[in-house]
Length: 459
Image (cartoon, rainbow, N blue to C red; front, side, top):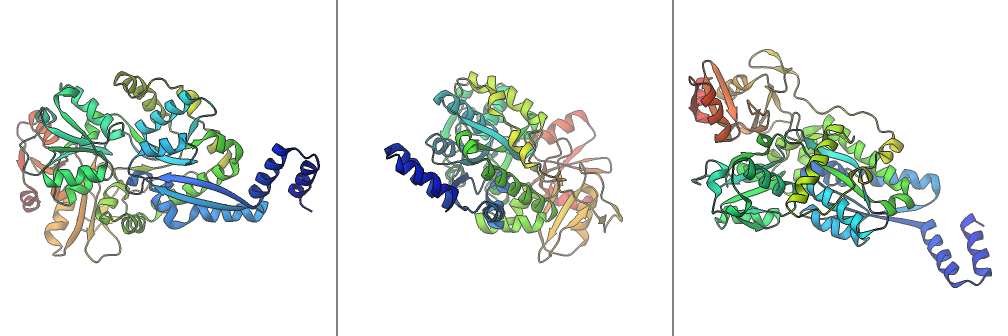
């Protein structure tokens, strides 16, 4: 007779109804422990806690190993959402146990859970981040007359209210001297907003990864504003229901270890990981690789980096000022104990490396390094700097799926053929936006703008 059965026998003998109910629950728990994971498949900054994690089966593998030790069966239910807000709603209803979302939704999650009382929720790890905020952006139609954020006055802008992208939009407009009331905000899910941009029913799309890159790659728009211009870290992370974490710390432990497995795989096999995520989500693999590839817009790691926590701390008063947050005890919300328990190994971010075959030198500087994905190739080709990348495109004679190069000012990785190019003496410099290129030319009077084709020809 098992311990659970002995306990149940004693409780039943006492003929206490509530005890009998507890006995039934204990027997069920002894057989199956369920965990519900809420994730955002197309928010590819969270793939190590969602899409890629699920596709690789790491969580189930970790739970199976745990079950062999404790004799329990663990069942995972995956629920896919378009943004973080519905995940928070489900967590507050005790219907999602572990979720991943962006920084502003995370803070709102913690605030609303604390307001509701009880154990609340906890931020336990990071999935991906960008220290300058480049994961968010504003896209306008290619032929739009808008060339700066100020040009959006009186225009319709689609965004997901309360999302990280919405927060970037509000702060960027304020920095540009544009009041939030000067635009007509359309509260739409990312996919709806992307369709509206393409159809011309909105004038701009302010969204988070991977929607800006997807719209630009598809030819539906150009990047008007790069979130990196704001200079504020943006991140996505994992939040849990504390009640569930207290009852099943071994499940949270297994999840964090599985997340670490997925992070290590993504960083060691970036192209394969991008293809996997693209296949599952329907996103173009070239777009996924823009964000998740080596030296990509997103850096993937699990630690609760102090720089990111400082950014969250600075975001709280802003969210209060715009009325989406009442109060939040951030120190109570952030819980590093789960990561400490998991004792995860350090994982190095993926970097572009190797030898540039065109310029004949090692690729060592991530602020300059580029990457070319030739059609039919099983691997990408490194470029030591933007000039080398352009020369490779000029001389290869091969069809290119995508060429990636970092912004000369912010380091934001972008599609080389969608960049704004500037020639300054012999240097050929890429910028993600007209604003960035214009600012450089203002500071360097001898510099001149070039089209992508002209930049290739000049290399």
